[in-house]
Length: 332
Image 1 (cartoon, rainbow, N blue to C red):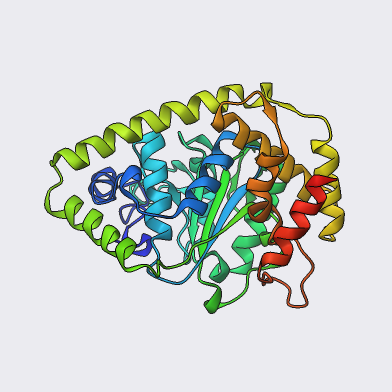
Image 2 (image 1 turned 120 degrees about the vertical axis):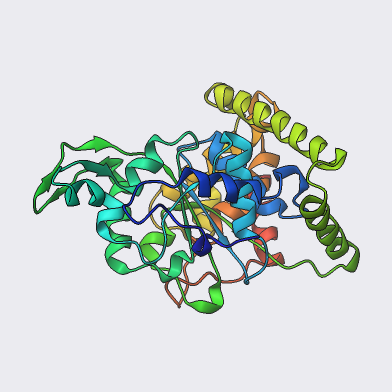
């Protein structure tokens, strides 16, 4: 599998390279063939169904298939790779600028930046690998657009009318390589911790899935996985259509507020994300009401990065005591 930094965002003139995009997509495992990754897959699905939840941050060591899972998820939904913001991207590439090939020919042709591409893309996802290493200047740009939902480009020789730009921010990072700015960490609705499998049988299943896909891409196993992806896409689209019709059982919103107090959350974003994520989970399950079980299911992902920490940008470990706190608050 290739990493995002191995995949060009476009040709030297800045235009998208569709052939490269198709070639890279063909090398990504079907979503249904990914072994494990349950926490990350669930977070991605919940954030897609409940699009007001915010983004997803996946943390884990290198080589744990974080990027592969994000790519497979987006391919399953849209048949295309996510719009990817490389670490070394220029502000022209992020905000938009001029087509270089056209300028060299004496013609000024504007080109949309990655933020506009993500907002208008079929999945509405902007993916950033190693998001904790992103330049502070780009972080500030992204924070402004994510918080307002408006992209306003006013630069030398290029001024555009403000446009709506709403997208789901998906980031991956290795926490051993540095912390994430607290302002950006807070913008991720859900956090998924990706751990390497420590069971030999599961590791063997991962190898079998990868080797089968690489060596026998036309095999019945791969064909069935692609059909399973089509079914999952249909299920998620149905859940997205009905999520706002899902109600909250008595006491559920109060329980979300109690959890926010118990974990010392600042502001009200945390309990709102918790409630929306629980509703999205209920919609995915096909139930009409959000119950305590749905809140319990999303509690860790929605709360782990919002608790007070003496080291800003780093998340304290979530342990059994935190699970007990969730259970006690949900019991009332």
